[in-house]
Length: 226
Length: 105
Image 1 (tube, one colour):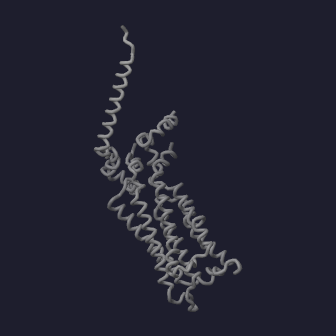
Image 2 (cartoon, chains in turn red, blue):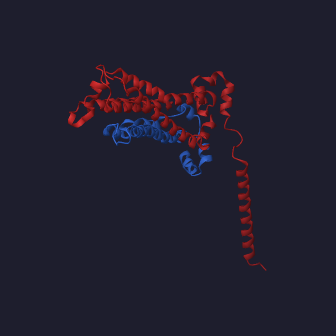
Image 3 (cartoon, chains in turn cyan, purple):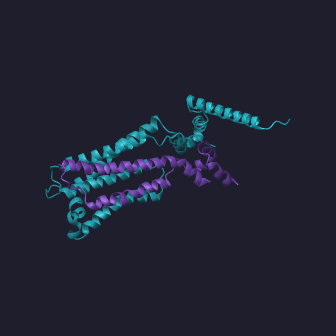
């Protein structure tokens, strides 16, 4: 058993708490605000295309949706610590699929595609402000999470962070002290509270009492040998 | 046994993350739609094309989170290999103990 601490993360319930869920919800709220406000401010009253036309609702909607797709996929790429080629394919493939969809949908005749007709090819694609908006919004959306995980890893690391870094920097060869400390981490006194132990004692005691009384009763009921 | 121990180490964390991520992406997407409604004085007009909204959860953002749930691991398999899962299982859930003793035979 090299790292007992790893196996305690689940039982200590470090991953599933309300702070985490609310934190992600707050992150979603922040992202939605950033995406909407930045897009509206950028496209509100300035020329969008080289010919001086301003953006219509279809262009703003497609830009906003592109920002969401990019931000959401970059966010999940940021949380992954172990990439396989399948994850790369799915994460970046999702972004590519969105552009492919926009392209193909735009190539359909206007009776099907409506507002989206040639949107990517003629309106969004040649406009630098479209691409720079996506870049800006995506970065703005993932910065708080990036800051959070950086601070956590630097100042309040969890066990798997430490083990990852030990393995990555080959600390198990150089820094024996750190290695030993991490290995013996879970062999500590229990963190279960005093009251729980008292409860357990009482339960045990009651169980014993009941057993005693039941044996007494059975003894009383037994016919005497004489 | 190897796959089993990897599974146990990673299960709790990534389960929660997947749920949280679903909250995150749908809040980030859905609220922009709501803000736009407020912006247009609740005219009922949708800023996104219907197909965008249709494809968002079905195709465009579903596969990465599934691949994360399947393939993500905190530490490499060589570290996990050196660890036996029995202690963890024994102190977490008694139901698994008979299963482990079966596997060991």
